Amino acid sequence: MILVFGGTTEGRKAVEVLEEAGASYYYSTKTGEQDITLHHGQRIDGALDEEAMLAFCREHSIKLIVDAAHPFASQLHHTIAQVSEQLNIPTIRYERIYPPRDESICWIDDYSQIPRDINSLLATTGVQSIAKLKPLEAEGIKVYHRILNRESSIALALKQGASNEQLCYYEDPNDIPVKADAILLKESGMSGGFVEKVEAAKALGMRIVALKRPNLPNTFAKVNGPYGLRRSVEKLLPEFYPLHSGLTTGTCATAAAVAETLRLVKGETPDEVPVLLPDGETIMVAVGYGDGYAYCVKEAGDDPDVTNGIEVRASVESSDAFAIYGGEGVGRFTLPGFDYPPGEAAINKAPREMIRKNLKPFGASLKVTISVPQGAEIARRTFNPRLGIEGGISIIGVSGIVKPFSEEAFIDSIRKCMTVAKASGSERVVINSGGKSERFVKALYPTLPQQAFVEYGNYIGETLKIANEQDFKAVTLGVMLGKAVKLAAGNLDTHSRKSVMDKAFIQQMLIEAGCDIDISEITLAREIWEKLPQDKLSIFAKTIISHCADYCNPLLPNGELTILLIDDEGRIYQ
Image 1 (cartoon, rainbow, N blue to C red):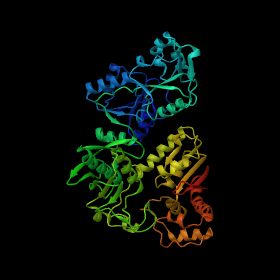
Image 2 (image 1 turned 60 degrees about the horizontal axis):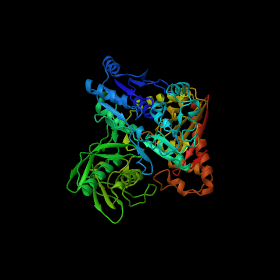
Image 3 (image 1 turned 60 degrees about the vertical axis):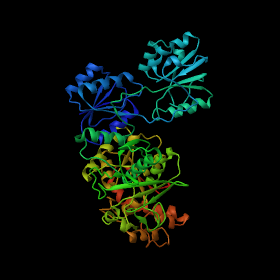
Image 4 (image 1 turned 45 degrees about the vertical axis):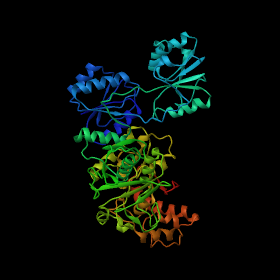
């Protein structure tokens, strides 16, 4: 059993990660005021001292603790560390992502270091800090306290000795309600809005004083994002998830490139290296070293993948400019329609950007060559030859992590997400194939809660059926062209195992839209966007959407369906 300490944005994210397992866990908050929906988790509220925490862990057979509490909850972190050590329970710290410390900010270790050469101070450090700031008032400094506008916070603030005149409230978290000489912030990280608050204060010409986040116990295993949390849970409590995640070839290539660059630049050869993923989090990846290269073993987890166990290698040389090349076993594009033109190594855009970002801190112009010794042989067992990628495998991966699901488990996860979306109170659910299409569609629905966005993967039909079961009155389906042309032909499951692009049917739709273009040589559906005249894009999009609607609308008899067709640039047609 897992015990999570939350009450924060990270606590909410931890719940999302753990819910994927379909297993039971406990979620603890101090005040019980966080609005959060748990389906497999059981909520416990109220502060736990060491004795109470020990008793709870023993009684409920806790095998793993996830500390996703506020970074300044020092006493709680200390108590968790004590309990963890006494009961030999591993602890994962779900840490925030922190920007580099701005040198223009006055950084302090405790409240006694607040500069005294100011007349007024706006403190955003919470009600618990009010008593600690009283010495400033004794020295004639006017102190204002920005707190949450809720009854419990106001009552506690007054109990701490603040007056009503000193209190101001959060409306927009990034607004500055009082223009004082200086503002006092906690180093709360990206999810705590630290950057936005600093920018707002700078715009008003306020002096910025920031309280450094306290150090965490060294015994905690630290992660700073959902993928790292899942992988740590899989490692420390393997039985919690029925299926385990893996790494994309893009992450493996990046890890190998980081390792070999460390050896080249610093002479270091660590067993693990940090890899910055596209979502901004950092995970640790195991690496090894050979003669002139570093390598990472492809780890597919429980996802069926012919590349599982292969070595992805990287060699690195100093160069006049940064460049990424494909070596032995990395395929080459032979047809148009991919991220790069024919002749280029089949290393997709996302992995290239990952490698570039991860090597940027080394500040050198580098030539990186990615190779996969077994790539040519393995590629014959993939779709690469059919797609016009020859000579090896592709280095791919958008998120950097492979999350495995059987068809049954995936559909069950969709059902769970739909249940959460319904529980959020949203009248509309927005379904998308993945993170890319979701980013584009989200801009159209800025007021919807995060829970209202659900990924369908390839299971469009099943997802619409579930939306109907949940009695959603409004459903938005975001779909990109590759899946849309399959859906328009009546394929409600768009997985390549179940359906392929039907060029004859696409040609028929083009004729319906009055588009006279030849698509006989295309390999990927998205090439059609490049062939279509600008004045025909919208007409063709409406034709596809109409055919999609013919198959989708009957699955949502009691609701209104909006279908959005998205191109690779993020343009949306409806």
